[in-house]
Amino acid sequence: MKSLNRPVISHNGNSINDHEIYDIMLDQRRHLSMRNSLLAIKSLVSDKYNAYIALNGKLEDINRLAENHPNRSELDSLKKCYDYNTGVINTLRQAILATTDSCPYCQINNELNKRDHYLPKALFAEFSILSLNLIPTCDICNEIKSYNVFNQTERRIIHPYYDQINNHRFLCADISIYNDTPVVNYRVENIESIDPYLFEVIKKHFEVLNLQKRYGKISHKELHRTIRCFGRNAPCRKCPIEITRYFNGEADNSKENYGVNHWNTALLHGMAACDDIIGFLETVLGAEEIKWPRQ
Image 1 (cartoon, helix red, strand yellow):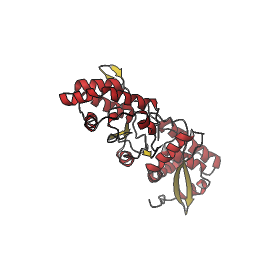
Image 2 (tube, helix red, strand yellow):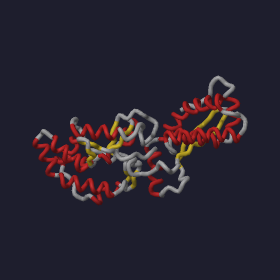
Image 3 (tube, one colour):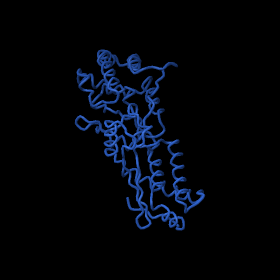
Image 4 (cartoon, rainbow, N blue to C red):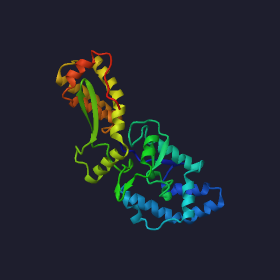
């Protein structure tokens, strides 16, 4: 999980905001009736944009602040804006993908095939081309999230452009050894006094996107690689201080490259904190392969 810089959209060499994107999109529409429909609700869409921005990420209140809504025909026109395949909309799509090289919802997948509408397009068509509502995501997160943004009045998914989580560690990996087999359990904990509202969103995000199971599954391959690297590079395999220093150093490298709440950073911190790590390393480095529990 990570925060992202907000997308920068350029047109003819100049940076443009979301209101300007809407205006340029109108100019580029060739279908006259569609253009007139979108032009008629320009002021309404602008008010919706302003309400979205004013909430600063707390979008569970969006309907309370933006009371007027487009009619069904206008909503259909707004939904189709995102499907417009030329001009400023293509520029917008490219800019969204340029904000990251991995899915900010999970940081597992580097193949970003989707631009998730944080507020679903089917329910909030007025935000279909709002750059702040478009999140670059992997297929899995996009499918799981779907409409699961809110639970009644509570937000359940982090907003990468608004929720500043990169400087606060909360993702932990507990590693236990049972019968010479490593078991990794991921969890979230408010280690560094994150704002309670934000931490509740983080916890729900972790649950909704099934990250405990997904992180546990992918971590086993990385754990195998990490232990082999330790066997080749560690200065001392039996000194607790050196072992802790080694894995904490690797965690610092992972933090620098991927972030403090990346699943691999948490895994390495878990290795450093595992009480049974010395005996396990002695066993596994002398074996042909590591035994993994079934997933």
